[in-house]
Length: 250
Image (cartoon, rainbow, N blue to C red):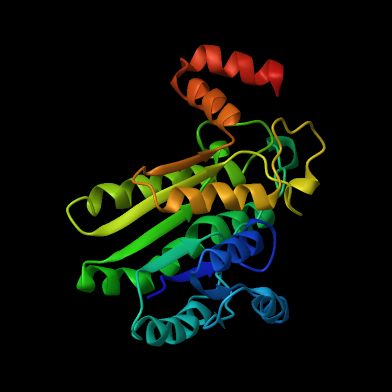
């Protein structure tokens, strides 16, 4: 029996690459995002059968509930594990001098609150069945405060924190929790950056890292390893040293 994946944020970038790679590995996928036309086109490309499209807007609770009614029926059919992947993301490079409330609110809503809205649907079922697999896409950018990352950095730090919360709360259940923390990945979002992005990966390579990590027991799937090491080191630096480095290297 094939594992069933509900992938939110599937229409492009890492999400689309992840859908293709998962399908090649034999997973059956429910594709969700706002763009139904793009999801249908992606579905037609996927290997295997049984995939479905469940469009939604993560900023609209009723939209998520409507999509969930379809997903729940799908998950009630015989199959393998049920895996929930939250990959929806919004990004604008914003610093304090360009404070843009609307953009910051959108990033928080899509990157964080949308994940919580979605989890409110699946958690009762996972708890009832004492089974399931939750995958949240955070970021290495959530490890510490960064220049020109208002909104985005805060939302990803919160997602990283949320993943740790769930891991602890569900430690004595059979529900698996994983956090994905990428570095720089070439997508339409990172195309907005006008600075050097070291160790930049393609979306396909990012998808490879994620799929390889799903079958492992580690909580955090971090990549590329060079950036993961750098941010892991920065995470433990004393504030005074870190802020000096960030000001001079940012």
